[in-house]
Length: 246
Image 1 (cartoon, rainbow, N blue to C red):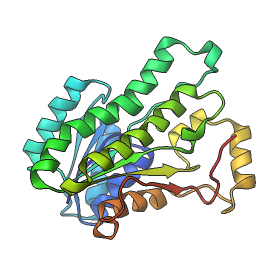
Image 2: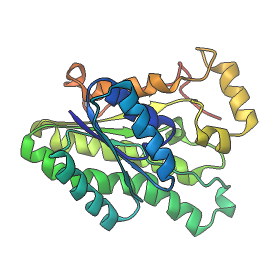
Image 3: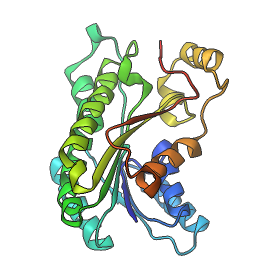
């Protein structure tokens, strides 16, 4: 199968790119800024499977025109796309009373509107082939976290988007599901999560540890595989058993 992964140059997105390539799939992925980092991901994917086809594309998913342009390039380069993984995300933390328009709009446009643009762009291809797998990467924050109203609203919105995609296109051979990661060691959690929240997680998570990136990556590739063909409109939590955040 052919995967398209947004935000694939680091963290969870990188893990999904590498896992998909390792499992024998071709992968196109996007990055926002660091071409060098994206190049390293391509090299790592090809290192795990010498015949892997893995290509990186610079993309700001908050731009509808840019999504259209890159999607057309990917479809031309790969000849199609079977699996779309919407992972690109940012956070700009602040209390609601102090949150600026830019902090609100910037996060919503990337995390939620960007996912909508990507899904909309690839749906015609999936409809034509009567097959598609859409995987949206959410967060425990969809239920609310102090200081992250913009981020939490964007992730909660993904749940509504996923449910709608599942209902609209399930009869066309297309499934849409969410992966809901807990606490993983990524740039976002290192930079955007307070030490108090990290300590809380490690204290109360039933698994007693943070997650390993390969664990969430394998969940994403599972949702794209034959074993998940009758799973549609679902949110799979990968969180060690801790289903809520402070």
